[in-house]
Image (cartoon, rainbow, N blue to C red; front, top):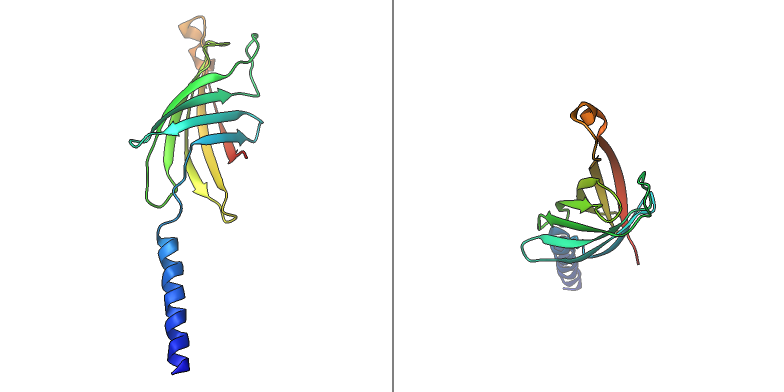
Length: 147
C-alpha cells in the first residue's frame, strides 16, 4: 500500500540519520588553528598512534627577544565519538627559556565546526629556587580552525 511504502521510506531515512549520528566525524587536529588571543598553531600530521608535531606561533610573550615560531609535540586519543582529548608541549627555545604544556578536548560544535578548548601551564626559568613560587602561570584558550 502507499501508506506502508511511505512508512518504510521514513524508517529507512531515520535509520540512515541515526547511523550517521552514531559515528560523528573524527576530530582531526591536522591543520591551522587560531586562538582567542590571536596565536596560531599548525599541526603537521596526526599519526595512526595519535602522536603529532607542529609549530606554535604565539601572539603574546613577556620575553625580551622577538617572537619566533616554536616547535610543538603532542598526542591525542583517537576516540570514535570524535571529541578526543589531547595534550602537547611547546618549547619556546628560539626566543625564551620557557616551556608550555597544553591539554584539551576537541568538540564538533552545533554549527559543524571544530573547536579546541584548552588549559595550559607556562613554566618560566627563574634564577633561584626561592623564586620557584612565581615561575608557573596557568590559563585557558579556545582555538578555532583557520581556513
